[in-house]
Length: 207
Image (cartoon, rainbow, N blue to C red; front, side):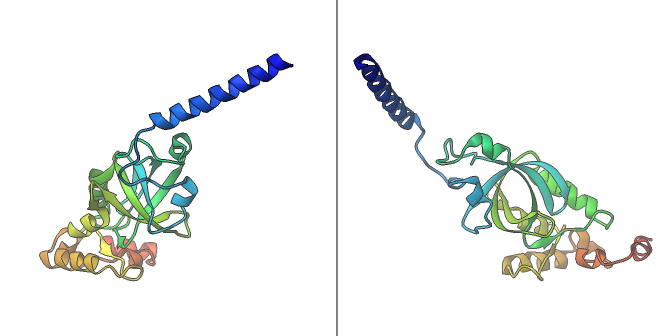
């Protein structure tokens, strides 16, 4: 019995020693941590940034990818990297509405978004989930606001019905005045109107 108790005590001491070594070997915390947990990250809090590896561009304002750790931080406390990488989400860029597939400049907007972020790590400021299960979020790549970049090139409308960002309104106005992208077409139809059009109306518009 004494031998068993001595062995148990030795194992306990070894366990404590190993835990201390693991804690000391962790890289120092720095940069912007992704969040304390994946659940908190995906709660819609405006104060939390999530990082995503973009894997698929759906259209000019929507993309898909896997949540990843902050690429600028080696260690994020409380985040299991294996569980994080299993989290796949679809993101709809907040504050803009790009031309739909089938609309003029729809393909151009998709290609430009692909050029901006495809295969890259983007930071997300999550807002909420929409009725389709997509996360509405402001997206950043290397410090650049992706929604602003799309507006600047005239490849999206400012979605004023759902966003009051004055910078976005200004960028849209400047692109329109310069005739950039979709604004070179006097018949440009906002996507929210396009979605309400019948197939007959869409075919007539394209012809």
